[in-house]
View (cartoon, helix red, strand yellow):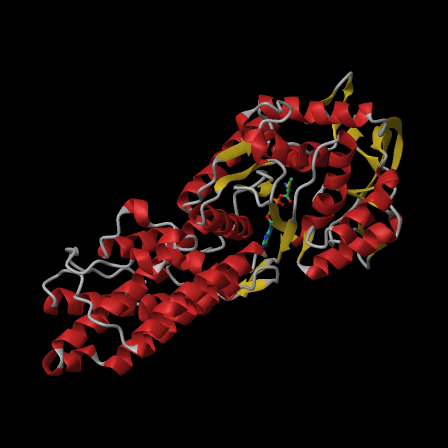
Length: 517
Ligand code: ME8
């Protein structure tokens, strides 16, 4: 039986600096996935937040000459501001320095210990502060600069200290069984293969505490130790829904339906996290999806905007829904992508300004002028009308299927395929010519076009929520008639309903000249 709840999370970001475009990308994509399920009738819980412990935070704070907590407070506020600026619909924002999170982290630690999976020993090995990760010597290499690097290309340092260990080696077979019996547990396929071969190559027990600093969650019963940052970081996903209080109202959302993360941290989510959960007797998430990395193609993005890697500046410059649309449509979700000024301008001008925006503007202006500003009168539908209307319903079916597998770009391709087809429909029906020859048919064509825009706008809501809402306002669609059930013909526009004066929804990006820059 499929549940009517849906729980989705982003990674929690290190607030050792300001949010960058990679953080924004992950949040936008996860927001689209969350909004999609909400509009499709699920009770959704969407969690994001900040990962505030670890040596990386501590070192940055030292460099700045401020306490780690002050650094965390300052930058976490920027991450919260970014969520608002991106119109993210997260239901909560978790900070790992919160009281509730200390309680959850200590509870899962105790549960793992009670299961006999934690023991005290001594760690001697390589550690990357940048990745906050332990690596086996065979995963590292000394390069020409005489520095030793880990598999992600970050420097590693030798660590030797007393440490608690988690019996990860005991979970090797259980993890392989998990990946085999639940093939969807890790996506996309390349990430699944990487994890599979990592686990098959043999798992060593994991060092899960440190003694040389105290910025972290204290180990229960041995406060000389703080937990390894990834133990507490991963636990945020259950803290956020009430753990350890299994009577908490939100606990019904667990297990998570999807953890959306970047490809660099799949190992933590697909190996360590399920092992911790198995040990603590907590059900496992359904899926871990590792998206790709974004790269700036290097060119200067615009004369008037300095560093548009800053998500706030990017939104300010191109518009929020333009940025959302660009990343979600342009980059196949799960693969790496690059962005550049031209790519953003080309994509958003073509699909939003000249595509959907232009179609809406042209048809709604004709309606305002020729149909008395009300929804046109619909007579019998011709085959061409029916075909284009059906396509929008089919796009919903496609979007449901692709969004369930995080194929965000594929859902958008299907929806904007309808826009392209509707454009051809509008051009070939020539409603402007029908005005004189067959006004009743003109009204039907305009009705069909407006109805297509209604359906497309409903489908666009997860991706470009603000602009989709404006389009639906222009069609006088009531706020309570905007979820996906309403894509159906039963909820089609009713002829005669008054429409507000049409206005443009997607301004065309115009290159600034040197004089205006
Ligand atoms: O890894 N393009 O935090 P983080 C796309 N605190 N995604 C990117 C990116 C880029 N250029 N750069 C980073 C952490 N990301 C941990 C997570 S979860 C329990 C703890 C993604 O601030 C990255 O892959 O380094 C990760 O999913 C997220 O941004 C936060 O990265």
